[in-house]
Image (cartoon, rainbow, N blue to C red; front, side):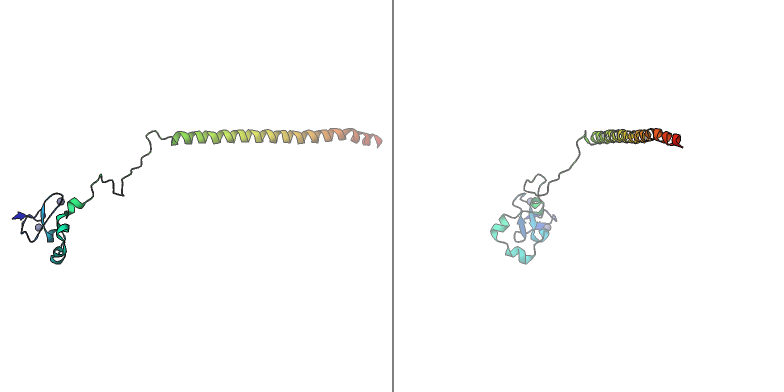
Length: 134
Ligand SMILES: [Zn+2]
Ligand SMILES: [Zn+2]
């Protein structure tokens, strides 16, 4: 007589099922079989049977589709410095754009004022001439 690895009770030869892997004996009822389902097991199925513990996939099972992939960013992530560079890049772009805009604006204004002045200055002799006529 051997004892069941599940319930530690004695198990008769007719009720026992032996694990192919760990060679432990179990009551068929202790591993989820009914009398009917146990009686339907073939001799080959019984000899190749594995207990629930041995059926569990091991952690290093390569066939397991679930692999624990833990993503962790590299210790020296380039993100902060890249962000800083980007910030600086935008700032420099802003500055260059603004200075370009300012230059254009100033030259535009100067151009306009200059033309205005030239127009007025040019008009002065005419006005003077007109005044002289009066
Ligand atoms: Zn048992
Ligand atoms: Zn086993």
